[in-house]
Length: 255
Image (cartoon, rainbow, N blue to C red; front, side, top):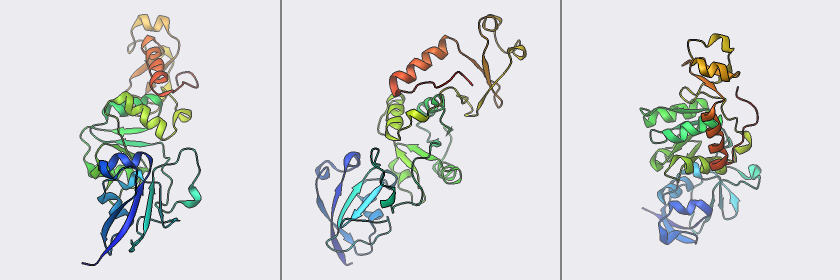
């Protein structure tokens, strides 16, 4: 088979996916003559969902660009401080959609994202095909530590989560996607992911302890699971927790 040789350079956190000897430097790779930028980027270990910009010989290209002998390929992750929208050719839609679907190993992160007010679907029985279906149908960002899931051709919006523990995972996702200003804590049910609504305490005599009804005046409920929330000490602890680990502030009262 005819081969071509191209030079690659990956930037910032994309280096974490590479073999140590290839990180933060230029290196050459022999490629099949029909190899695309997407094929080679993923063959080197980088899921295409982590890539925001590909430059070949200084020109922005898409993932379907066929590599030629002598090409120089620069691969960049998401840019937080610079708007590069006019340069993008790797996907038709921007990545900054703030609805998520989390894989089976992201239950703790899903719970915390819901606490922050971000619509996050999660079920520990979700198969990869179902996650992909939800991502495409509802324009949700896939949250996973499974590189192979993110390498699937159909995936357009995905985020590889580097951290192992859910508090650090929340901090990573909030910072990476610049979400702190758009958080709306305590507006979604932690169990159902459904919006919470105000409810008059007069309707709660059989659902909330009498001592809580005496102390509290503001309640919200989920219309799906009928769970009731109020601003007790547990809510105060959660509020402080979100501020401490992710810089998330509550912009208004519950509901």
